[in-house]
Structures are given as C-alpha cells and as structure tokens.
Image (cartoon, rainbow, N blue to C red; front, side, top):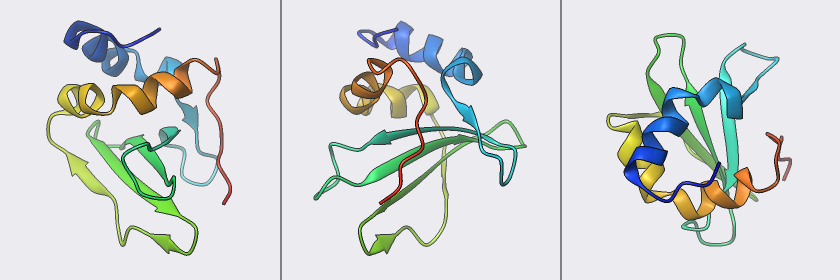
Length: 99
C-alpha cells in the first residue's frame, strides 16, 4: 500500500492491524516509522489502544515523549505523516526500532 489520497489514509486506518505488529510487552498493535518531521530522525509509533482509539509516541537518541498522545482524527494524522509512513510501508514489514 502507498498512501496517495485521503481514501488511502482511511484504508490504512481501517486495515491497521494488517500493517502493525503486536508489541509483546503490552499486546497492543503498533506501527513504528522514522519520523521525517522530527529533527535528528526520531521514531514515532502509531498505536491502537485497547479502547480502539489511536495514540502516538515519539522518541530518539537521549529523549522520549513523556507519555502517549491521543490522536483525535487518525485519518488526518496518517495523511499528514504519509511521507514517513509510506517510506516504512515500502519496506514491506513492521519493524522494531532500537536507538
């Protein structure tokens, strides 16, 4: 999948479990990508919570978000981050990132 339209972004959200991995620590679905909007190449995780709401969490070398942030419009979030998400989708697999 490549996100080229808002319809594609909605499809990505609808099929999120297909693209994400299950975190063995908490059992939630997570899609991690190198966030091209973050200075010095941080990682952002798009997370499907147990409440079926979406959250994001970002981290990098020597820093991390204090907590997850709820995403109120996940389709718009994916649309706004499509360049970074598409780069990850092109790898063909959900990856774990270690910094």
